[in-house]
Length: 594
Image (cartoon, rainbow, N blue to C red):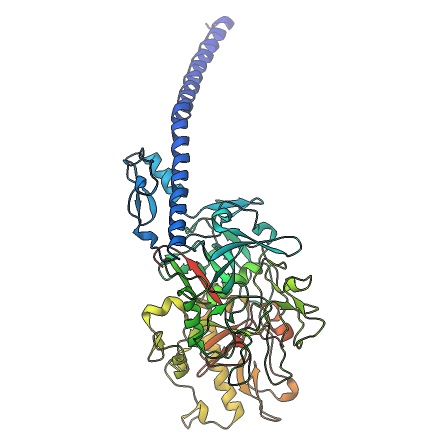
């Protein structure tokens, strides 16, 4: 028979056993913790981390100095050998580290050290400013002799920093406060301002609608598809603008203003200012100058690429590429400004056409967001650095990108792949048989037309006559709408370009069925002049106009005189030739072996 005392003893014994087990577990945990927090090992790891960071920085400075000494022609990938070959006296790590194609590489057997080197060297540095993490502006490979970082103060006054200083300084940008990083390049007097767009992924909660909702943005780490803050990217799309051919980019540098030429006041043979249809001038990117217009699509690409020539703004081709802005690159800026990190820009209404000469200037705003068509000298024109002028940028302040609403219509390097002869207006080295050559495809966004247009059809009626043979406006409109609708539907497969994702329909170029018979942009197949023509159907009421047949090239942004129809989501098709109100802008990318 169990007594109360025996029960107590049994309970005490069980308690003792449990206590011993708990103590053993806790002791094991403490031992494990102590092993993982060995102060000697931690000190060694911290020293190695600090030394690798210092060596990596010194290698970068060596490369920048060589670029400066050799006027931007030094090939960083030629740096191969021991660390001590480039940093005299640093020999203690020669058995663990070496330099391959300008990068620090770990060759030892310690896995932890390998992880440290990969972390410090294997990606572009991510910074945290104002509680937000993103890729810092990529200044690698840009010649220090031609490149300066730009700092804007509260009064919109500009100052500059050496890029070796700016690379360690985060005070000149703060994307959480809509303060985007700016630099300029200046070689042979050809100055160009650029704005940094860090690599990001996006999510549009209600795509394919006219609702101008805020676009969700998550910045990414380095050239990876990992969110800088460590959060999930479920439902997000990595923006395609940060893939250039086979190269992943940590971000892109976008021209701050529409392109101007090295002779912006030149009046060409047609009587228009800006530069004209030539490749003999250099691109500049400046505020308060006449933009470069009346230049054909092929020459726009050529002069953009010439910015890396010895006479161009950057002056080096080593690990640097400059090209005409693509449609997805336009979209990268548009989506960022439509997020919490930017603002919808006001129109640039500067357009003096009263004297038979288009004079469009960069970096201006009007008295309100949708002001359109103000002639030179109008009191409501506001320069880029004034209270109203800064509202024409994608940040609502002076650090953003200008002229993306209004100003000149901007040709982007984007083409409808329908085989039309107007595709051949691009230079012969880029195009063959009215198609973009394979080796140049990374410089263009190529869109697929509807099946009917691809196969050269577009017939109407039972007689088998083609579209262009019809004198009947309504028959033409039925076919034109059918062609453009099929092409527009194919836009759905393109991500990040601010077309299908940010609109719910399109307009096409047709004729009124009554009245004067004038050509106009239409949505319906039967309209007359009393019912109007152009229809605003994109986000922020921007025009979405789709081409076919002889209008294979894409333009963005809207014109100076288009009021609410202009904006970052506006699109327009054109034939690729010269036009008095059509310009462009370049994009600069930096990376290994570009």
